[in-house]
Image 1 (tube, rainbow, N blue to C red):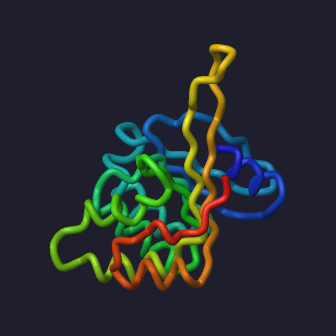
Image 2: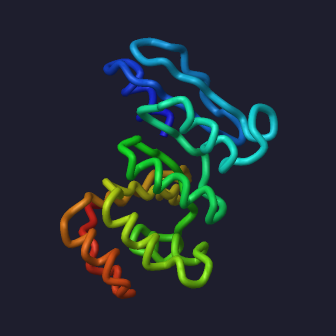
Length: 168
C-alpha cells in the first residue's frame, strides 16, 4: 500500500490521507499533499479517522486495516463518491474476499454491501510469504481485476466466488 501511495505522490497532484495503526512509512509531500494519521494518537478509531478525512475532500484514502463494519461501510461510501480507497483485509485467498466482508455485516445489510462492492471495487491484491527451497521466504501473489462478471457476482449474493478471474 505504501508503494501505491508513493507512486501517486511522485506522479500526480492529489490529496492523500492515510489512517494507520501504526504509521509504517512516512511520506513526504512531493507532487501530492500527504497527511498521515495514527489511530490512538491522532484519531480514536479507523472509522473516526475516515469520517474526519472525508470532511477534507481527499482524492485518496489509505486505511491500514478494515476491522469492523463501520469502517467498511464508510470506506465503501467514500469509494462511491469517487475517492480512491486503499486498504487491507485479512483473508486466506482472494476468492474469499466477499465472504470475509459479508462476515462483518449486520443482518439485513448484506445486499447493500454487495451492491456497493459491485459498484466500487477495482481490484484486489493478495500476498502471502511462503517458505522457499533455499530456506528463505518468497512472495506468492494473487491479483483480482475488476471485470463486469465480478460486479454481477458480488451483487448476485451467490457464494460461488471461485468464478473470479485470478492471475498468479
